[in-house]
Image (tube, rainbow over all chains, first blue to last red; front, side, top):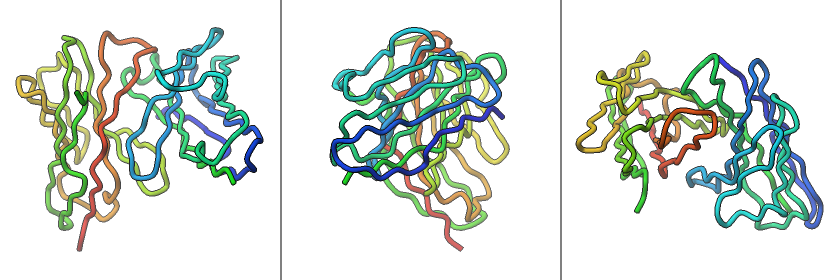
Length: 117
Length: 117
């Protein structure tokens, strides 16, 4: 099946620093990717929809200046958590859809566990 | 109102037995899709099965089947012949609207399944 690669899998950073998370579709082109956030033992909450070549669409309550999304190519979207604080500590996971190859399936990366000290 | 409701926070099943995980949904759209994902402790999201709102037959994928009852707005997941490796969190999700790359998924709160010997 289609593969979505997400890096890093785990990052620990100091408060005030910025962290970049990459999401790549390895064997298909993804014009749209999605970024989710998941707190422990809770569901996935959509943060934003990343659109190749245009601005991301953010969900209500998500600070676009805090969570910068760049989707510069058909295979790469990045999420940058700027000036991270302990409350940003969470599991971040991206997903993409291979419209040509797998229709309805939405493939997920393996997630990034962010811990802000 | 919740769009996706999973009323079972935790379920236990004995190995080789079948188990049903409940999911009800709420939408006014005529066209929508229903998904089940498995999330093991490693965090990755594994696609299990998909049911389109216009599909007349219940979806099946190996040991997974989706009991789709449109009038009741329910999309329960049935896992037959449970295995120890099935122990994980299971999420029901819905995509509303017409197919397309930009349609996001809304997730339920999940059911933690434990398979016992």
